[in-house]
Picture 1 (cartoon, rainbow, N blue to C red):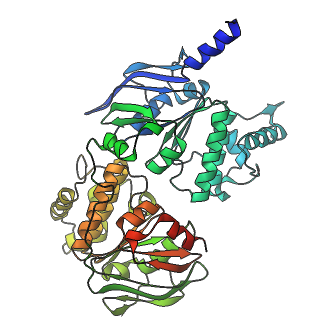
Picture 2: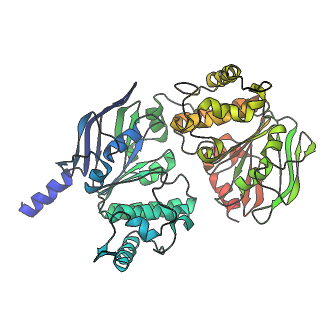
Picture 3: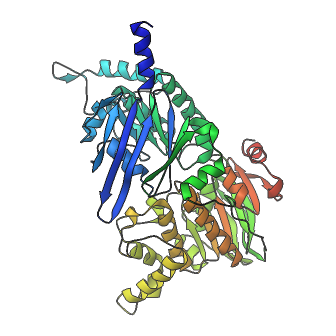
Length: 505
């Protein structure tokens, strides 16, 4: 065997990245317990686990945001001392977080080279940076104007800029945290095409996602964490979806979507010819008490915009809203709340919660009339009422004064739900109810939805996840370009293809 052949064989055996027996504790929490990870060149390793499993802590140690209490990091067989984000970047690691690290008012080019500007005799060499940016976009097969303002780009384009940033620092290892959370179906397909190209270049990718269908499409291997421990790693082709869920939650789930027998009663909500310009056009539908109705469609179909009109968040140009067969005038969210309509928004962090306030304060905001005397807020009464919902909804908080920003996605969603249930809402609209929520917390949200329907609530679910729409709905409306294009009443016999055929025509 020649020296070159021996060297080549040796390179293949050396992992691109090894994290050996990483241990990390915070006050009162043992976040990682001797966790080991191995990433190979040119592979996608899916890192899975429920919220709080330790995924973020492990990645932040790799990214230099946290220091481990014990353990070693090796890159291409060499020990790497990563004590800061700069150390991580110099070691060839780049992390693309779910919330992009871009400055909206700067151009694409300025964002890519921010802090690493190419200079010539003291001035930024813009021509050099533009050429480098062009080469980077060519490398990932995309064409974006380097002079475009980042704030004017689509979410998919911003993500591409983040990938270009990663490649600009010669990253060998790229971590993608929930990269598809805000992408449309076609944009996800393009993301996967970019990932496949990166693999061909020998780049190793750690892919974090709660969307299991993506894992089976894009990942070569799967690593599962639970309660800070490494449960197991295996080839994606050798594991089933059911087994993967069991590894994540620590118990078998009989069904990903809990069964429920629908018992629809009288029509609770009726919408007639609701319109707002070209965004929502003559939309009519009805929901009965005790019924779960899904709204499907591609991004931009008008689903969220329709629900905002029903809730009074936007002003309609035409149409009627009827609650319990009585026409109501909903000019703003206050009117909707008085008519027992509530909306759990698509963006729970930006619109559903005040993140810098406590869980109790968020719960109390729409319910102040219940807890206020003549002048002062009765905190004892507010705490007692919130405690009831903390127990019934199984909200995991350290105390009622814990800041909302520090909760997991699933528990944030439960706090939003609690504040609306305290209003005794009869019509509950869930817009993307499980976005960014792990599979175990998803199941709990589904159980809550079924429980609310059984109590006679009228439930609307807007979701981009077709399995969720099919698994939870009694009926489905499909929207396209601001209009309802069809209704599916026999959901048990329907397929994702049935929905898509309506959604694209």
